[in-house]
Image 1 (cartoon, helix red, strand yellow):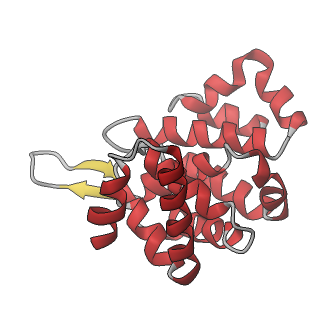
Image 2 (cartoon, helix red, strand yellow; image 1 turned 135 degrees about the vertical axis):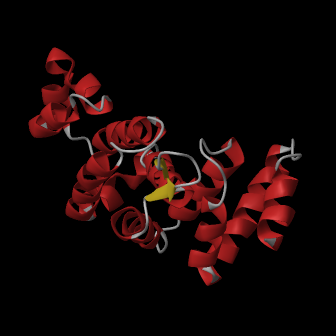
Length: 193
């Protein structure tokens, strides 16, 4: 909590680039010693993540010793944690997507925006690819389509980062990307992957 109310809150008011870079460097140093605690604090931020949260996640994974660990943790969250929460207070139960899983999915997409992550992504290809395909299926339920749009964006970033040109070409045909985004047609789009 101190981390979010201190460093992350202070980052909102930083306008000087050198000061921001110094703060991000301090954050990465903190992550070297307390990686999961720092990542979990960042995941408490609502989605879509603010630019400061995105920068924070990206600066951590740029460290060659931390990138794989962060990806392992985020894929573990989307594979093994609670992804839906049921609210039974009304007359009919309503499922909503768990904020932690939403945040982990968004964080993966933000990591895949970095060109320098190509080697890490390709070294962990099977784990990431299978986790993302599983996440497609788990986002189809819930009150809103926020989770399905999020995994769609994350998967697009993954395909681009890993330079999966064959998959890219296949999904570009006949608007198959759009099929991955919709609840009705995502099985068709997923079959083409």
